[in-house]
Image (tube, rainbow, N blue to C red):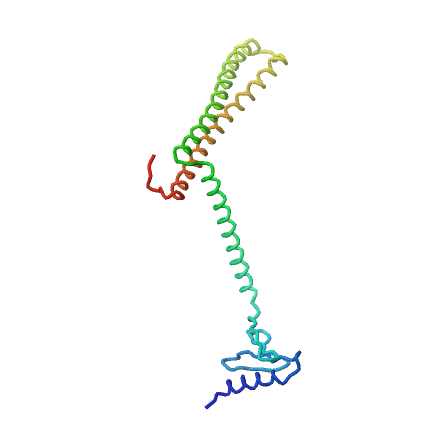
Amino acid sequence: MVSIEFRTLLCAIGLTLALPAAARIVCCDVNGKRVCGDPPPPVCDNRAKIIYLKGGLSKEIEAPLTPEQRAAREAEEARKKEEARLAAEQARKDRALLDSFTSVKELDAARDRAIADLEKNAEQAKNRLEAALAKQKKLDDEKEFYLKKPLPAVLKKQIEENEREIATQRQALEQKERDVAAVHERFAADRERYLQLTGKATARK
């Protein structure tokens, strides 16, 4: 026995062949039963549907998304887009890494040069700090003569400028320490990635 739903579908398809080109039949499932009509039955408004066009052509239309479903889809699309961006960025970094170095030895040499430059700058800051601390001692000795009277403007200015110099060089040394740590960390990550890309992940320096 042919089911009611199947007969309804056959009827809908048959109607599309007899209708003008602009006509269509819209069908959707309602509680397991197929409902068709032209114009579309109101019950199909918020459901997935199939539109049967003249000539036996058809196209499926998804049910409208709820606000929650739309938000979830947008979040998923954003996640995939971010993943694609990160993958492209990693690929760019990998190409740059392989183009820059032909061996782990070259990579380690570049690390050592970068650290040497930082340490050279740190040595300069250290020398300036030592000079400023020595000057501070002299300025403190001069202040002893003015314990009971105001400091001369020139001496006061020298003291203030020297204090700023001490603070500046101490900050410079602290920054150099952070920079050296960052270089070690960056090159360690580049080294590990280089070994992975070249198939030498088990290699050791």
